[in-house]
Image (cartoon, rainbow, N blue to C red; front, side):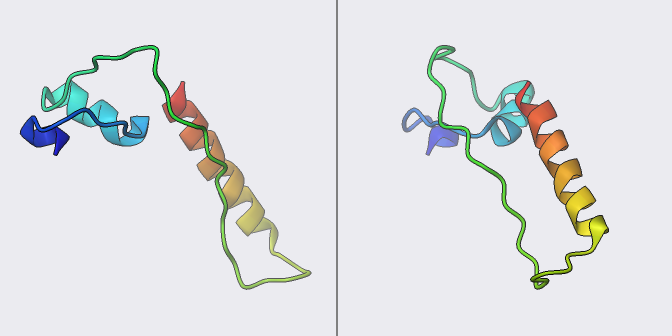
Length: 69
């Protein structure tokens, strides 16, 4: 609806930044932010989770923290 000029929307930065950059959206309220939600990864391992899954989770968290900055 926001892309059709039918209201104000609150989007995650990862979604909003490309739309703002392309001119499809404009940023009108710099002081309003949404909550920062934790990032979870789901896997089938219980006790012996492989280290590559932990490293993958760390990489994804680092990427999203960089996007938020």
